[in-house]
Image (cartoon, rainbow, N blue to C red):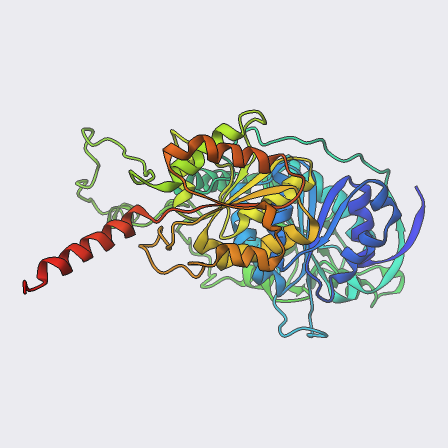
Amino acid sequence: MEKLLLLGDEAIAQAAIDAGMSGIYAYPGTPSTEIMEYVQASPEAKMHHIRSLWSANEKTAMETALGMSYAGKRAMVCMKHVGLNVAADAFINAAITGANGGLIVVSADDPSMHSSQNEQDSRFYGKFALIPILEPANQQEAYDMVHYGFQLSEDLHVPVLLRITTRLAHSRTGIQRLERRDQNTLRLPSNLKQFILLPSIARKQYRELLTKQSHFEAASDISDFNRYYDHADKKTGIIACGLAFNYLIENFPGHVVPHPVLKIGQYPVPRDAVNLLYESCEEILVLEDGYPIIEELLKGMLNKGKKIKGRLDGTLPRDGELSPAIVSEALGIPHFRGNEVPSIVKNRPPRLCDGCGHNDAFLALNEALEMYGRGRVFSDIGCYTLSALEPLESINSCVDMGASITMAIGAADAGLVPAVAAIGDSTFTHSGITGLLDAINNNSPITVLILDNSTTGMTGGQTSSAYGKVEDICRGLGVSDDHIHIIKPLRKHHEENMAIIQKELAYNGVSVIIPRRECIQTLNRKMRQKAKVKSMEVPS
């Protein structure tokens, strides 16, 4: 393949094109901006119909990329380090949902704050999310890591964080390209509940993420991006992370360092190699461009050779809440086992309230979607998330507030048409408006159900910011009046509601359907209050 002279950002973009990426989503921010700009200007990207969209913010970009991954295609999302704060809700939860198509999150850090308000190190986010991290030492590694990262993501079924810094992003060198790979075909997750983070599912998904940690460690142990260079001068052993390896070798003639060096480009940190360096040398120098993450790992606290027990060694469970019984067991103290649930008590899963309008809305939606098949409804956090359970089983995602619309955009970009978003009126104003704006700007073929129960029902009936103005917001954003429908979710209107939904599912653009019916709980509360006031009235 040809060789190109590219910035680090451009090398990442070209690699994503060559690696079979179907969509890239981003919000502009130095030093990451050029990744998206390169793809948008690339004739190859246009020829292969790669979606390259600026998003309203980093959160919507992350969710849209996750939606494309859900649909089985490779996606990349790019931001600067502080943008990862905005995307953190979706980013952390995406580790628990896992990935279907390969998903790479590029975070460009800015040591010395050349154009930023802080120096935060994105490796912390990757460690926090418990996912693999890649950190290139040069532009060629950045290119190669994108190919490797997409495959790693698909092999391990998790997102992968690619962390770069300003110097690598904005310096240029020759890049040897690899053979271009075709894009993935449309492929839904084998488990259609995988992306629904209801507690019962999320607990299972989280445990699976924990069991994968040994696989992540094994991948780091054999990774070509982690290399141990043994040399004669054992007085100092050096750990060099990412670009810091270049800063090291440039100090020595012929780039030959006389000390043992452990070059780290993939995390988790390769434990055996670190131990080998530690045991072989009198002292350790850690070079990392950013926070002292590995240095802290090496030093630890009270590291005086005594055994340290807790969640990591299995003395305490790695997941779940602690209790007096768990703590007493860890201490070896006998405890009273009086808190077990009796066998006579049956499990009672949560469900929509009797008389809830959401139930009738999803019954109509389910029937309207029968001709297209399952796996097309994206949702988020609210009462309506319970429609994931029997008997409705309507929705296929619940990642974070507002993710329904943006995931539907990404899935539609991947070819999953029609795609449906189901979002509550309160969640819509919390973080759904920006997603709808993206859909309008891109003329995405999605149908958005804004389930308007005139309150924030899930948290107890607080006043919804969208009360009385959902349709006006949609019109103001640019949804056509011809494709905004207000329906009454009642069983007697089922056929009429289903017909409206079917019509908009067939529309090749953005449509909004607002099933409007007051929450049964707040309505009952109002009626009780009225009855109470009336009973207190003094007869004339």
